[in-house]
Image 1 (cartoon, rainbow, N blue to C red):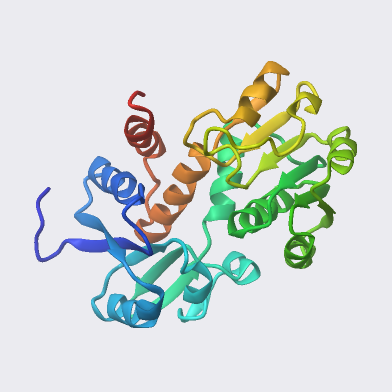
Image 2 (cartoon, one colour):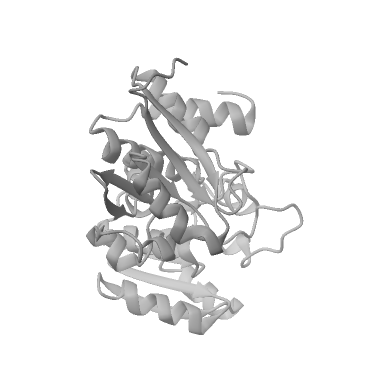
Length: 284
């Protein structure tokens, strides 16, 4: 890598940020297209966030990603918000143009692109989503934007899910249910697509979200967890002949959308995906 006085600087802010795969992914994209740019991690404690954003603006850092716990606060610190970022109340990508910061949310578009890549048809479908955190908000928004007719949300905290449903309800039909066995079973019968946005399945020994033997045959099941590559939910769904998708595509595509916002060039998606697969799974 050759760094000159003309090298553009990009990065990511979060706390912690050491685990982030974005530097690896975005650097590979810059190199693949021969762009004179670098991408670096900035660990920013919450109490330093406002100063950090001012610093990135002043230093003419061309763009940066935002990860937990800063996505919602950064939405209040930029000059402009895109429609997606405004509705979701969260920013994961910022573009700096002449000192003016625009906040984007590429999580929703990234999730949508990952489904399109897999040939999943959302128009008129019924989706059952588990979770009501920040990722769920973006995923739910993407499902509705993609044409889902009904979005049923199941979450342990009913009040948290209800709050999220009020935001997502502007885009379409959203109903919220508590995480109870009988309730989930009834919802499964009509589901065309199931999406897990919780962390359940990330650790070995995690309890099942619901009785996986009740997954309908042949539907689409998505788990936004990408490590392990196949969670117990996806394994059970595969045995039922379902189309299964993990979260790697969402991770790649949200990064690809950010890359395109910053550079105006088509992201080398295959290269970005290959680099992450090698890092995460040790193979391509």
